[in-house]
Amino acid sequence: MMTRLTAAVVLLLGLCPAVGAAPKPNVVFILADDLGYSDLGCYGGEIATPNLDALAKNGLRFTQFYNSTRCWPSRGALLSGYYPQQIHRDKLPGVAGGGVGGVRQPWARLLPDYLKPAGYRSYHSGKWHIDGKVLAGGFDRSLNVVSPGNFFTARGSSLDDVPVKPPADEKGYYLTVATADHAIECLKDHAANHAKAPFFHYIAFHAPHFPLHALPEDIAKYRDKYLEGWDKMREARFDRQKKLGITNTTLSAVERDLGPPYPYPDALKKLGAGEVDRTPPWGDLTKEQRRFQATKMAIHAAMVDRMDREIGRVIAQLKKMGAFDNTLILFASDNGASAEIMVRDGGHDPAAEPGSEKSYLCLGPGFASVCNAPFRRHKTWGHEGGISTPFIAHWPAGIAARGELRHTPAHFIDFVPTVLDLAGVEKPKDWKGERIPAAPGKSLAPALAKDVTISRDFLWWLHDDHRAIRVGDWKLVAAAGGPWELYDLKSDRAEQHNLAAKMPEKVKELSALWQKQTDAFIASVKKPVTKGKDEKDE
Image (cartoon, rainbow, N blue to C red):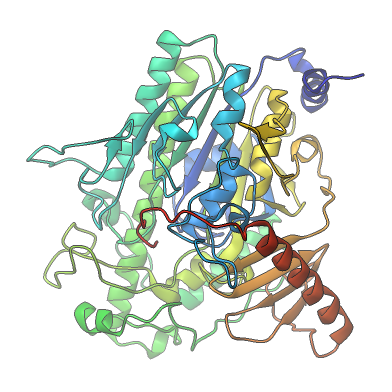
């Protein structure tokens, strides 16, 4: 009988015949925060992202990859291999204890615990937003970077789960750079002291999450770039997407009256006359509003640009230590771009330079509609704009294809089974005597080799009563408090042609399946849950 390890070696041979009996791959997962589907150059954006574009050119881009629509649910799904509702990391109807403060069951282990017996060392650099301490999750080293409403301070962060005391003078500190610095330091240490061991490195940038904070020289690069406005910019991005071949849908219509997902009316007063919480035609805005909105987008772009540069430094270290060729590098975003507008933490000083530490700006629905093009809606919604992410896979020793697209629908729940498959690791059946339930994800290894569709029954979403299910090319989706909408994603990923009225039986079929799965999740977590210390709601 073929063992799991033998199967993995055969798979590696199929992925890249020149490799031979390759050693276990290193894995680096790079996660952005609130990045839109079209923000990267290789997904149609105008922001300078040469390092990520190069990974795409020499690797793969997935066109239908999904997250769990918000920060903490997506991170729980990514590192556990389960829907967040299964592990108390998002809410279920009538069940207490789920959500941002929910605590995973003892059996709900994270990927490093599965990799450790195979000799892997695991590192974490950046945002955490998962319950529990990082090292308790199986990681060997960690920089848990907490952004207390300020990208210019290390305040609130922890090194190997020990709180960091920032220096009195933090001039020159910037969170995105600090995240990369720690990642590079971990890689250098690995090369010096653990060179024979494979590694998993989870690099979770805060960028471009609000508050919009960027280095002045990075903002200057984009300061006047967006004065033509969101309408023309959406069309330009969509035109590039069509040329790149990453979409075959129409461009969604702007939902002019759709505002932020959560109301913060006081924020509009604090932010001044330049702020707007809807997406009117660009020409209807005042001059002050156009400048204010374009400046916010410039800061967002600067944050993405800087993140890409820091990723370039990490890549340079991988090359320097001779690990680049056998490292599977993956990149994604935890949700779509955010339409939120709020002022919290240290507040907002209207006299402060936009993008500086005393300012507190959010992107808002206008330019978020651009960043999520060609899709509808934003972070927190179950529509495509909220759950779709760019997904890049690069692995010279294991992926023969260069610059190709992969069209299979896939999800964050697929990451753990994919890595275990490629590493030849058999997932245990129990943890300290408690049975580990079957996970819903699928290995994406076949899609790394060829543009095939990974077979699955469905993909499922629920967050703040936004809900959706996808079966094949059919998608049923509903906004919180709203009716079910039905779309054929094969030709309409922009979700412009609601077929619910024409196909009531299909709506009935898919809604019943969504409810059946929801009920199954509720039944599986109905045991009492220990409430953890509340984390910041992002």
